[in-house]
Structure formats: C-alpha cells, structure tokens
Length: 396
Image (cartoon, one colour):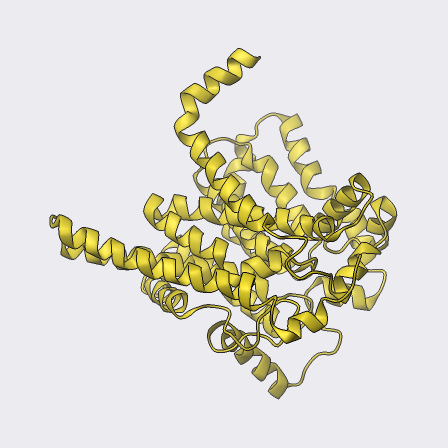
C-alpha cells in the first residue's frame, strides 16, 4: 500500500504538490488569528454556540444543513466551544469556496489568470469576513463555485462519477434557502448532459443508486418546508414581509450599490461604508461582464448571466439569501477581465519580450495593490473600528 502511494505521488507529484502548497497557503490565511482577531464573539455567534447539536437539532430546523452538520460535528469533537471552534466550520466552507473557485478559473482561463483571479478572491475582504465569522452566509459564498464546478465537470468529464456527485451536491443545496432556483436553472442548462449521462448508465443498479442519491434528501426537507407557510417562504428565498414596489426597486438597485459604491451597514461583517469590491476588481469585473455580453451565444455566457440574474433577484428580495451569493460571480467576471486585458496586450505585442513582461507586471502590481488593500482592511482596519469593538464583546 505504501509503495503504491509513493508511486502515485512520484507519477503525479507535479500536480499534487502545487495543490498541497496552495491549500496550505489558503488554510494559513483563513486560520490566522481566527480565535483572537476580534478578542470576543458577537451576539449572533454566541447564539451559534447554543444551537441544538446532532440529529435533534438538525431535525428541528434542517435549513442550512451542510454547515449545521459540520458545526455539530466540530462541537461534539471539541468540548470547549472557544472562538476558533465556533468559527471553524465557516473557515472550512471558505476554503472549499476558494478551492472550487480556483479550479474553475484554471479550467476556464489557464494558470496565470487563474492564479491572479484566485489570489484576488482569496484575499477579498468580503471572503475573509464571511469565512471567519460564525454565520450562515458562507454557505452562499461556497454554493456557486461548487455548483459551477459540478456543472463544468458534467459538461466535460467522460467519467460517469459526476452523475453520482451531482445529485448529492444539488440535494444538499436544496437545504439552503433560495438555492432551489439555482439548482433548477442548472438542471435545465444541463438537461442534455444529464439525459446522455443517464443513458450511459446502462446497468439497472447504477440508475437505482443515482435515483436514490437524488431522492433521499427530499422527505425530511419537504416535511419541514410544508409544515408552515413561513418555512416554505424561507425555502424559496422570500422575505417574511414582502416589500412594496418602490421598496423592492430600491433593494434591487441596492445590490450593485453595495458592490460598487458603499457596502452594507453591518459592523459584524463589514467595515464602514467601503464598497465590497475595490476599484481594480470593479474595473476588471465590468470588463468581464462586457466580454461575456459580447459572446452571449456561448454556453458559459448563458450560464453565468442566468445564475447572475437569479442571484441578483434573490438578494434584492431581502429574504434569507445574502450578498455572499453574488460575490463569487463578480470575481469570476473580474478574472475574465484580467484574462481579457492580458490577451489583448499580448496580442498587440506577440514577440516583444520587454512589452510582454511590462504588461504582465503592471497587472500583477495592480493585483498586489488590491490584495494589500483588502488584507489590511480586514486584519487591521476592521478589528480596530469602534463599531466593530462595540459588537464583539461576548465571551464564549
């Protein structure tokens, strides 16, 4: 067994070790001062420490099942619910979001653009906030990168294993309020691939397993959803009180306002009125949106804009769906913008090594400045802000 493992690592080390190194960097940044940055917990985090554990808690309220299950597991394993343990489930989901996002960029844009885009996403102040604070927001942050990776894998993979993975991912996503619409959009976009994959599962037992993997999630979910009207509204992403037309219009416009002009007033998760996206990332994301808008016939463009529209509407409704759902999409657009800039620059100077190096270096410097700004905003400015200090006052 050990010999086989060594042989595998020797044959695939060029792919494995970079992944190990990247994961280590991501984990280090996510875990740095996780239990001490704010000195205490917020009131909503204290509520997490008092959540019912195990099957009893999950059966009472299965919404946000993936992170609740992980929290239960961690709190049962670690008797002392310190700040690190309370936030650790969020950090794990944050790492999954970054890894899924990075893999997507590698498949779409190649190594150089993927490295820059993933670095921007990893060090985004919003990603750090949501991944290091005990709330349910991080599930929305991780949802789209993971679901998109499943979608791309179903489109390009020859192995039928993704026919088994997809229903598990979609089944878990159904437990997250509002994501039923994204699951429905994905299944519609993949209808040809799913039909072809089903036909390739010629053995009856394989079809039975895929069917069970898709259906086994539904009974406990549907029992909870239809036990009350408020549960159903939450499940489909609606607010408890539906806003009027004028208020809904304001909330609809508020989504880009938070992304580009000033962020939400929420000291638990954000610093003052700073926009969610810095100026460089904003410019690149708008360039990426322009690029995909000029290639609407492409499958990827239709997928991105379909999910973008549904996500925007869900966030604007003001229900349980948070802004974290749309942030990964904006960074996907930003990575496209970076790739677009590099492509056009290198097309103008295809054989001039100085010009090529200059163009790549300028973008790399801009990325580095953006990274520095976001990391300092989260690790330095936010924990020392008076509003933040007034929120994080509770000891576990």
